[in-house]
Amino acid sequence: MERFNPLNDYLFLKLMGEEGDEEQCLAFLNAVLSSKSKQPVKLVKILENKTFTAEVIGEKSSILDVRVETDNGERINIEVQLKDLHNMEKRTLLHWGREFTKGISAGDDYKELPKVITINIVNFDNINLDDFHTCFHLWEDDHPDYLLTDVLEIHFINMVKFRKLKTGDIANNLLERWLPSVDGLHFLM
Image (cartoon, rainbow, N blue to C red; front, top):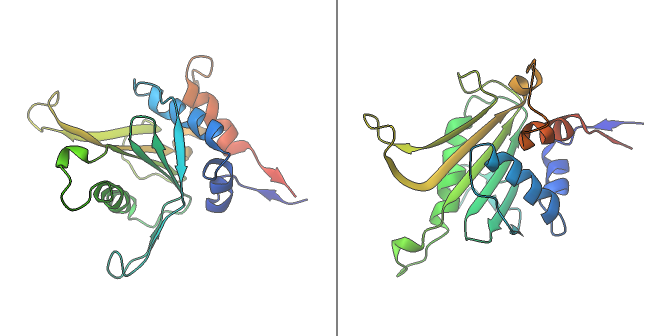
């Protein structure tokens, strides 16, 4: 029997990113977002897995692992990256930007642009902070409580740091309850 890692792009897409996977995708999203005091998502629609071809973004093609739209119009990208290619921050902004600009057509009001949340599950250290789950927004440098806009939200879930947790709050923290199953669940074939 062979063991497969569910953080493999293909397997993660099969677990969370296809029609019929809405329930587990919704539960995972609420675990990630609730750990940062967000309102729970009530409904998700899984969007087609999208490949941005080289013609679309110049010389670089890119694949979004899982794309969903929430009941309030937010768009969420979930990406798994197992190997450190030393470009995760810029790659994330590229994916966020492409999804954000797809939310408007010529003649539309800019108010129609959706909030886009990007969730990155990484298997390497890329953020120089101790936390295994970090979340970024557009805050003003000298007034850190002033948010320019809430349309950008970027999460990094570092599985290396998560595995090193000595004590966790699995009883009260949905994300800490979810991550062992995402990381440790191996499929036998």
